[in-house]
Every structure is written in structure tokens, then in C-alpha cells.
Length: 335
Image (cartoon, rainbow, N blue to C red; front, side):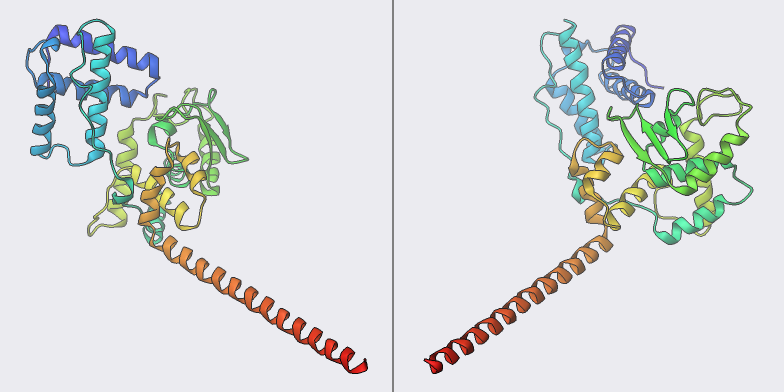
């Protein structure tokens, strides 16, 4: 286990507490901040925070890149954002005079170049068929179909409560008040999710847990439970190998890709997924071969329609001028 000296540990906990209060971070994000910054501080052994330089931070980043601990620009961006926020807090609290991280620039991820893995229709059918077996409960099926049909994050689903969350099963709507990006928004879910939610809630009437999805003791289900459930279904559906990710985020990517492939509005997708920027949708546009084909066929169809309209108008003009020219000649003969 990575350790840091007591003084730095106290300062780190003060920072984590400040971030939690000021930003209202998810529990998972808070733990990520604590774990990653602990690794960062342990890299410098017992060095005082005021002695850490810009060169030290760059050395830390270079070490992780050279050892291929981080391979994605997005990972660098997350780490550097945390480091910058930490040193900004130290300056604000008067622990150091100036931030050595302020000149560090993070590589921006190019969303359109990112390769996304998702389930195709045949894979969805096989996994859904496995979910229908007696191995899984109505609660498992409800969670699976919710994730697949809404694109919501696992933490967003597991944070749903029976009293404080707006869930309208008849209208198939959920209001997500607490999200990773702090952007409250409505989502809708499928009829399959509606069906299993109804069955699950009938079975769950005797339990007084505050959480919509909970374990036998009434406590909130852990992320690991969802991961194991999806991993288990993949192993059963595809016993001869699997070359895609196994986590629940695969279902989020599947929903977004399917939305784009069927011609869904990108602004609508941005709202449903809770993204800050429309650029996040680019990766799904690039990944969707069907969308490109569909868009081009619609372009050709529109082009043909426009040409026919143009040809029709041209023909009407020709007939009009021909008719008027003939009428003019008749008048000239009469005179």
C-alpha cells in the first residue's frame, strides 16, 4: 500500500474534504482523487510540498508515460487536472506561495480519433437471452436493461433512492439529480426495463432500504457487483473468447452508438449522457459506419428529389413559354 508522511496526509485529507464540499463530487471520484494524489506525493518520498518544483512534476509525468502506466491522453488530462487543483488549494490555504503546476499543460484528448467498443445487435440478443435464465433475478435484469436503454453511468443508477429520486415507471422517466458532471437531467428507459422494474419492486416491497437497488442487508450495491454480473453474462454468452471490454461502461457506449446509428439528435444525446460538450458525440459519429451510409443515402435521395423538382419547374416553364408564344402568334395573324 502506498504511504505518505503524516503532515502531507493531513493536508491531502483537507483538500479532499474541500473538493467534496465545494464540488459535490461522487464517492467514486473522491476516492480516485485520494488514491491518485497519494501515489503522486509518495513519488517524492518525504519531500516537503513547498520543495516540489515544476521539474519534479514533469519527472513524475514522464515516469508514468515511459513505463506505459498511462497510455491515453484522457488519463493524463485527469491526473494533471487533479495535480493543478491540489496545488491551487495549497496556494489558497497559504501552505505554498506559488503553484509549480500552473505552467503544466495537459494533452487534450481527440474524441473523434478514439476507438469505442460497443455491442452489436447479435451480441445484445445473446447476452439478453442469458439474462433471461434463472441464474439472474428480476433486480439484475432491471439494472441491465436500465443501463442498456439509458446510457446512464453505474454510479448514477446505484445512487437512485426510493424517496429522493424522481422515478416515474408508468411514463418511463427518471430524473438524475446527482451526476458525475453535476448536470441534472431527465432520461427515459425502455419497456423491457419498465417491465423488470415493476416485477422487482413488487418483490422488494418488504425491504425498507433507502436505495432503489440494494443488497440483502439493505445497503447500496457496489460497482463490483454490476461488473461481475455483466462479465458473467459475457462469459456464458461467448465461451470461446471475447475481444471487447467487460465492464458496465460497455452498455453506455452501446446506447450512444445505437442512438447515433439510428439517426438520433446529437444535442439530445449530449443531454441524455450529461456531457458538457457536444464534441463528446464526435467519437460515436466516427464509429458508426451505418450512420455514414444512411446519411449518404439520404443525401442522394434529397439530391434526386431536388433534381426532379428542378426538372419539373424547367418543363413547366418550357410549356408556359411555348403556350404564350403560340398565343402571341395567333394574335399577330388576327391583326
